[in-house]
Image (cartoon, rainbow, N blue to C red; front, side, top):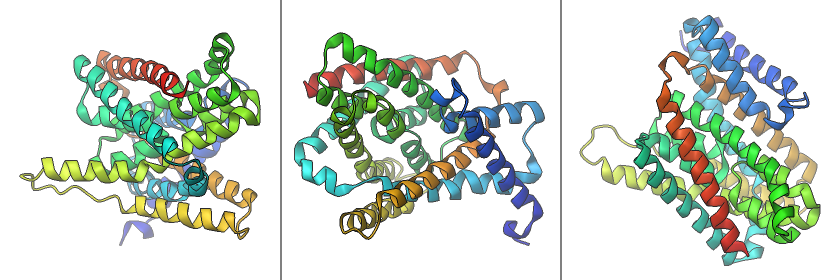
Amino acid sequence: MTMYKTVEFYKGLLLMFFITVLAYSLSLLPILSLIGPLAIAILIAVIYRNVFQYPESLRSGIQFSSKIILRIAIILYGIRLNIKMIVDEGFPLLFRASLVILFTLFMTFLIGRMLGVDNRLLLLLASGTGICGAAAIGAVSSILDSDEEDTAMAIGMISCLGTLFALVAPLIASITHMTPEIYGQWVGFSLHEIAQALLAGSSFGNESLTPAILSKLSRVLLLFPVTILIVMILSFTNKESKKKVSFPYFVLGFVALSIIGTIFLENGIMSLSFQSYVASIATFLLTVAMAAVGMSVDLKKFNRDALKPIFTLLLTSVALSLFVWIIVI
């Protein structure tokens, strides 16, 4: 009997969906709305795991959520990416997005290695910070076959810290007298998640929101070449290893849906409301996957070393904000 025919499989799926619905409900509350359902789902799952222990009988449904549903979510996430908008802005936009990713990788590994943080966790943090938060971490973790505890830690830290930066950004803009356009580019190139860039970018209306969206989407577009580059590097460095590096075929789906979505949107076949609907489904499924990832976190294994990746992410994010401010003014 395959896992798809077992009652336990569907119970595991149902538990992850229940946690997700609960997270969305809690995110409607005043303070928790700032954190967002994704981080809340991870937190609920971690609490469940450490209070009631891991439900071994439901493992098949939970692992399906953390792997298959995660890949589906990343593919659907591609609907957010309007390639034409980025192409219209030309090479300078993509060039600066590339600089942002390279700088983030450099700073994350520079600081992280000095603090003794594991390289795989550093790559997850760098990907999430430099590209597009949880979606990038999910894609890279699939390639690395990362420990789910590391994945949950990286996503949780980026969700919380990125939200904090998004809330502080308008205050910094007012103090430094940034123009709306410069401010939009600044938050678009420096904040981690699309939702965070939209939250901060909307502070000064469409004048800041439009450049924020374009800047952020230019980084999302680079998810595909970055993941392919990681596969190539790992394949080269692991030549003597019997374990082959898995190719992220689901990222091809992400690119394909981006292209299809852009063509349909530009030709009036697809409406903005439908695009938003599909994007909402992607976010929901991503939250389901993150709930499953959170179920693997055993707090008993955490110690003072958990402070090192947090400190790495904090310093990298501050350095990235300063770097982006330099290249956009």
